[in-house]
Amino acid sequence: MSTAEGFGVEVPSLEQWQFAPYLQWAMQNIQSFLPVHQISRGDRVTEFARRPADLGGLTAAHPWDERTATLTEVMAATHTDGWMITHRGEIVGEQYLGTLQPAGMHLLMSVSKSLTATTAGLLAASGELDLDRPVTDYVPGLVGSGYDGALVRHLVDMRTGVKFSEEYLDEDAEVRLLEEAIGWAPKKHPEVPDSLLGFLATLERDTPHGGDFDYKSCETDALGFVIEGAAGRHAADVMSERLWAPMGAEFDAHVGIDAVGSGMFDGGVSAAMRDLARFGNLFVNRGRALDGVAVLPEWWVDDCFAGGPDSRQAFEATSDYNLMPGGMYRNGFWFPTASDDVMLALGIHGQMIYMNRATGVVGVKVSSWPTPQDAEKLFWTVRAFEVASWALNRGEA
Image (tube, rainbow, N blue to C red):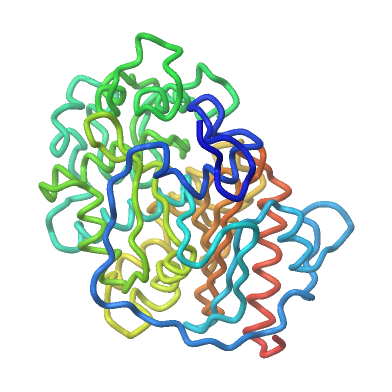
């Protein structure tokens, strides 16, 4: 094996790449050892203005202990590869740590879900996709599976009744079997199909569709196939044409693919940090890109922030998310409190886009947490972005 440049470690095997000492390099170099499909930018690049602000010394309270840390300390303590904050379209803070550079790709994990759900929303806006139609109308390959009877709306809100475990540290959980199906992990379970769609077709239903919120990565992979069925093209190309190019992305992105070329849209997108900020700015700017061009319909942005009539009740019924009291999940985004002004795109190992439409602030963080989930690192990062958000809004930074 060759040596991973700048890290002094060998390029990892499928069994190694999600663990130290390989994880940080792997998160920035997926295309070096796994197949990907490009998400192309367009000819137009939207530009941020710059207004450097003194943010590093802002103090954020610990999410549950009686102690504080500065924004700089929070970022240093949470395995950050890069972070940036924009305020009303201006970059006010941006830092790249370790080997990450502005043009560098970083694996987004489940931030990919927010990009994918937004792409589905754009197809809904054009009339090519009906969120209230059955999933199997768009993906015949799922007829006879647990997705029978599920609506596309149930996918974007994580409310199907499909049986799927998201226990990342359990190698027998479906979330890990999915990785075997797409070739992101060694094949330890011979019965797992060798394609993503084949794996989804094996899933069964164990509760009624449209019930309580139940976070499952498989939902967004099914949504990727819905997008392809509705548009008649690879979902990565649809994302490029409808979202990435129209928002004025600065860099191409890419998504991991299985042996037959299907995209892993639940967590396989890699992108540069500034383009994540461009995406976040769409939601604090009424769907408009940095240059004022309308990209997202206002009704879709409003629907994200407002939620469905029972989104918060469906979320509250799931005890696993009691660290987000009053929150909800809508259209691929998390709402961590009862406020309808702040929403998050989140991915394991510390990926985040923070969007506050009341202050016009977007925060982006890409990370390499050693473990998939870490509540302290997650909520302290949110606190740090919150403090910066309101300081910028008051003109104090």
